[in-house]
Length: 390
Image (cartoon, rainbow, N blue to C red; front, top):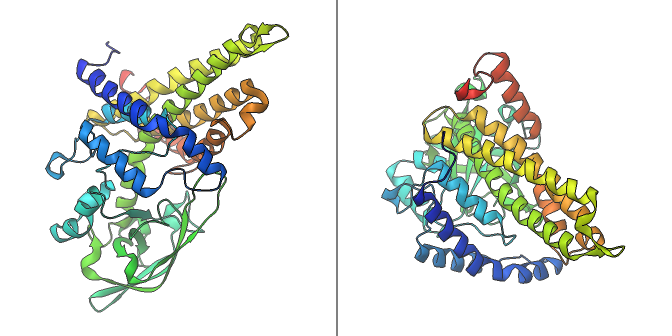
């Protein structure tokens, strides 16, 4: 059994690490300053400029197929790169990506929505969550009724990431009330903002914020159905499932950077005439953080490896999402405690992480939903204790 990375994986990770260190991290203090002034930490034009620089480094479309100009990297490699991105609190991501379900578009839709999104000329958002349908996505109520060759959408979506900036939305709505939403009763639509939906900003405890999307008799041409009529819920679950090893991969990078800050602080800060690091309470917090971080790392890489094997990765991904999200929250909490009063100020990024990382236990599958999936798989015999090594 070999737990080492290949030479190629090491080389790509090191290139990504170099880019983050040289091009992204120098912006960190300005990001904190702007956010203290209640301004966006990184403007869209600045993000685009960084993504263009990254493209020159060879990083464009980590998951995007090569036929669309992307790198089409294996899941393990994507996980490693997202960890590098997580080391900085600058809200950066590599360009050249599009929602995975957009690849189900037909040729006409790909020209209008997919390719411009990959190139950064269009911004999308995915909308399935509603005020009464969060974890229970099958409880969506937004309706889509036929009117000739068109569809009329009515209802509201909420907590939609990118909803304030998007110029089109991928919307899942109930298209057949006589069928179960999960079994042919829902459809996904590509809906331009110009068709009439509006977004409303939702203030949150983190930086930035999601949006509510309001649809009041929005007319959508039949040609804007994504995939097949009745396929909406299945596409939605595929969209949500992709993030369940990417999100904790990013969390590992945050935890690594935060723990390094705690170690450096403990070695230089003196209390009662001795370095803080000599205090056993501090040593135990650092030891627990490193142990949990390492456990999360291997759970996540195993989930990504399972994806690369072409196997069903839902069980492994749920475990990585559950543990990784809890891990980073616990690590950041200890790091804040080690820094004392300074950790609670906005002069350092720790309180920012404290707020931002709390979201990881909620979005794209709450802790409770991951536990439900994991226990259900075991109780119904869908998987064995010990996974592929059982």
